[in-house]
Structures are given as C-alpha cells and as structure tokens.
Amino acid sequence: MAAKTAGGNNAFHNFHNDFAHITDPNERRRLALAEIDKAPFGWYHVRACMVAGTGFFTDSYDIFCVSLLTIMLGIVYHPGSGVLSTPQDTAIKVSTSAGTVIGQLGFGALADIVGRKKMYGLELILIIVATLAQSLTGPGPGTSIVGLIIFWRVLMGIGIGGDYPLSSIITSEFATTKWRGAMMGAVFAMQGFGQLGGALVMLCLTAGFKGSLSSAKDYTACSVQGSQCSIAVDKMWRALIGMGVVPAAIALYYRLTIPETPRYTFDVARDVEQANADAAKYLSGSHGNGKTDEITHATARQQDATQLEVPKASLKDFFSFYGKINNGKILFGTAMSWLVLDVAFYGLGLNSSTVLQAIGYGGGGSTYHKLFNLAAGNCILVCAGAIPGYWLAVATIDTVGRKPLQLIGFTFLTILFIVWGFAFKHISGHGMLAIYVLIQLFFNWGPNTTTFIVPGECFPTRYRSTSHGISAASGKIGSIIAQAAIAPLRTRGATKANASPWLNHVMQIFSAFMFVGIFTTLLIPETKRRTLEDLAQDWDMGGESITGAPIVKNAHHNGSDEIVTESKQD
Figure 1 (cartoon, rainbow, N blue to C red):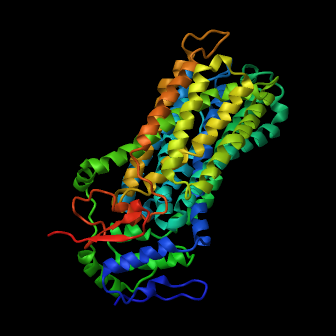
Figure 2: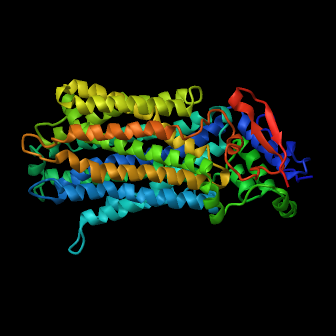
Figure 3: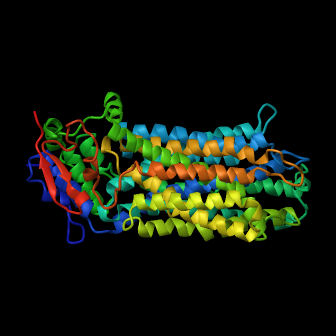
C-alpha cells in the first residue's frame, strides 16, 4: 500500500489518497492521470493558462517591437539618412528568429531529459536579462550598436524559443481532456494581446514626447545628433524594449514554483509516488510539488521503476521510434505545416505599410505624426483581424477539431493570396485592407493556432517536448526564409516611383506555400477530446505498449468509446 499524504477537505479533495491502496504502479498511474483528464474546469486550469500565457504575451511583445526598434535606431544612430541600411535592418529582425530556433530545439530536448519543471522559468530569466541588456546598451569606439543589439536579441530569441515547447506541453499535460485545445489556444492567443500591448506602449511614448518629436518634419531632420527629437527617440526605444520585462517578471515566480507534470514523473522519471502527490497538489489549486514520506517514497520508487512498463527515452530509441514510417510522417506533417505557415505569416508584414496607407495611417507631416500613425495603425490591424481570429479558434477548436480548422484555414489562405497576388494591380487600397484582415483572421482561426497545439498533444510523453521543439523550430526557419530570402525579392527592379515592383509575385509565392500546407495537414492526426495516453496508441511502438502489459486501443474511429484489448505476445 502506498503512503498517504496529508491534506484535503470539502473544497480541495485529496485525489492521491483515493489510490493509496492500489499496489500496482501501472494501475495507480492510470487512475491518477484519469483524474486529471476528467477533472472539471477550475481555477487551477485558469491559473495554468495565465502563467503560460503571460510568457507568450512577453514573447509576442518583444517580437512585435523589433519593427519599431529598427525605425528608431535608424533615427538615433544614422544621422543624415535617419534609417538603417537594408542589411542592418534585416539582420536585427532575423537575429531573434535565429535565436528562437536554437531555443526551441535546445529547451525542447532538455525538457524531455531533465524535466519540465527544471527548465520552466529559466527561459524567462534569459528573456529578462537579454531585454534589460538591450534597453541599456549603447555604442562605443570599438563597438557597433547594431552588433550589440543583434547579440542580445539572439539570446532573447533563445529564451523565447524555449517558451514554445515548454508552455505548450506543460499546459497540455495538466489540462482536462475536454477543454485541452481551448486551454492551449488561450495560452497562444496571448500573442495577440502582446502585439496590441507593444502598439499601445508605443502610442503612450509617442504622446509623451509629442513636443520633442513635433520639432522635426521627418526622420532625416530628427536624426540630427543632439537635437531634441533625436534624444527623445533614444529614450523611447529604450523604454519600449525595457517594458517587455514587466510581464515576464510577474510570471517568473509562478513558473519557478510549478510542480513537475505528473505525466513526466510517471513516464520518464518513473516516480509513481511523487507523480501521484504532484497530481493531487495541482488539482487542489496549490503551488509547488506534492510531499511524500521519504522512506516510503524511496522504497516504492525502487519497486515501481522495475514494474512500471513505460518505454525509456534514449537517443537510439528516438531515431528508432521516428525511423518507423507511421511515426516519422506525423513529425514531418507537424514540422512542415508550421514551416510553410510561417513563411507567409511573417511575410505578410511586407504589406502592412500598404494597408496602413490605405486607411490613412501610412505617413504624417512630422516625426510625431509618422510614429503615432504607425502605432495607431498597428493597433487597428491587430484588433481587426488577429485578436478575433485567436479567440474564435479558442471557442471552436474543441468542437470543430484541430485538423478541420487547419485544413479550412490553409484552403482559404491559398485562395486569398492567389487573389491578392494575381489581381494586385486592380485592387484598391480598401480592398487590400479587407484581404489583409481576412488573411489575419484565417491565419489565427486556423493553422497559426493549430500548428502550436497539435505537436503538444500527439507525441508520446518521453519525446513530446523534443518533437514540439523540432516542429516549432521548423516554423522559425520558415520565418527566416520569408525575411531573408523572399522579402528582398519585392524590391527587384525598384524605382523611385515604385519601391516594391515585385510585391505581387511575392504574394503568389506565398499562395504556393499555403497550397502545400493543405497536403501536410493530411499527415497529422485529429486530437480533439482524446486523452494523451489514447493518442499514444496511434504510434507504431514496435509491439511495445506505452503503458505496459496489455495494449489498449480506443475504437474512436468508429464513433465508439469501446476499449479493445490486445495481449502482448512474448
């Protein structure tokens, strides 16, 4: 019999003690995870979404602000022209994505090796340090401000990259099955508020320095060293970047004090007693890890490690596992869907200046009006398409399903980009605004949300974080392709009268990527309202059960809850 833990009342039930009499660790594992899966939606679920979502708010804020940052750096550090060179501008923007790829792969793998809890919070510390360093950095006789910003943004990108797999899988592994998609979607939807937050902070800063900014008619005039306008812009970009620390600092304590996810403790650490205690403490709404009797814990762990029949993770097993065609195609499907999506998602920003011009926020008679209109226009665009799309996905993902939303999204995006690309010269400014808003809507009410959610659900526990990191890193490689390879194409044959003559062809290229996304979507499974353990039965385990003893298959394909049991053949 397992040791009982203290605590529990009418409001907070002690689920651990319900199963203390079960001697079989496999059965205790199944019962404890079932309690998490079927638990009614409660405040502990809301808290989990808030803690994970605050990180995504910070990530999105920092990524969004880079377009404003490069404008202001050009004004302050390029007197005469008032703008950064194209290579400098591109390098600063791509540096974050490059760091994000490293973070997604590195933190993703480490979370499977040492545990989710040990890594969660470290990525936020890295973001805080790199963000503060950016806001306080300055040039010197032997240094370049652009080089320093790139260095710190790569480090910040590593932290942002780590947040993707960690927040996704921690939310997934703690979520109730019925609303798992909505919980993960709500975490990801904080990106929309992060973009809005960045635009609102820029609005406030611009209004605060209105007097100084109004003294210069354009960026060139503002770039005169020592001028009121130049000094004001220098203060603005530091404050804009520095404000990104605030939400990260708020979430840091809660991330550092979360318990290890019971699924990791069961399936990778193979510590049944601790996993039961952690599950009970999480469901009670308390912070931190559950407590167990040390002597009983040590004895039980030694016994459970030999009895608990869950495959062990290793590099050899990883390549063997994904070397099977049925397993490899799902990882390929999640990774390639994210890659082709992000090529167009990040490339869409190429059109923001055209769209802002169409709604009257594309310029201004002074530096103040230019920066104010840029911030206000981005507020409008985020509120018009991005935020509604995110929350429509949250509302429908557990009823419509992940795969249908992604398939429908890629289909509509293909059509919209074809229309925009081939009818580019015949569409009015307001028509472009309508297409832009629709594209933002279907991005977020479709593949932008589902490509984040599905990899956090469909993979086995021992490789869930690594696989999500690989999928997310593929997406960021897509964004690098968009910014470094496809974006420069728009200026082919540029003249003073037409700065982006190839923009219509770029839209046509994006439509091709969206079309590919339709077919990569067919490779992923539908994960709607299926437990993570049930989803694990879809994998080719080579005759090895994910939970040991009998192999259990769910007959969900026939619309039934019937359980079919097959005995392992020795």
